[in-house]
Image (cartoon, rainbow, N blue to C red; front, side):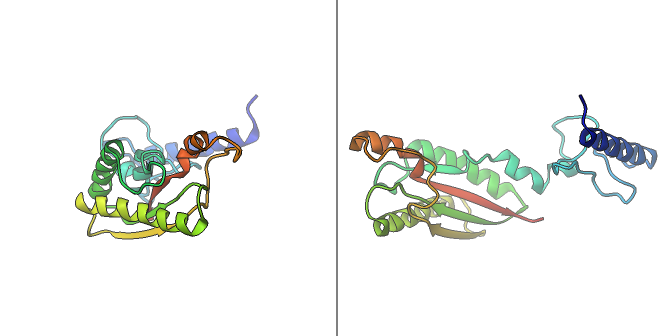
Length: 190
């Protein structure tokens, strides 16, 4: 059963495609444009393309960088009570830094550090900031010096784990691993 919303969306897209095709406003990469020459976007913010290919076109601009770098790719994890990067996380940052540096649409980068709930809040605040500084320093060695980079530590805030505090210490440390992280947030030109 097709609901009214889907029918309306399909009718809107069909009308835009017909208008763009009639006006001859598709380029050699088959990106649909309206009569004013602007790229047509779906309600989800995606470009309307009549043929999918890997070619570069108006749709692979700044809207695409966040889709190329998932949250997991932009998240670096740390060992318990550490602010040093291991080889796996360095490799991840190597890949992320290349994409960010090659991107012309990234205006600034926010590097946000976190800690797990073990220990005093004041210590975890400092540790989370130190982790974020470590990531910033590493990215600087890869060429991210000219970008506007903001660093902050949020300590135990924004926990992503749900661990029972009654677990044995070693089990609790393992359970809280995802909280010991730094997230790289990209601010792009709109």
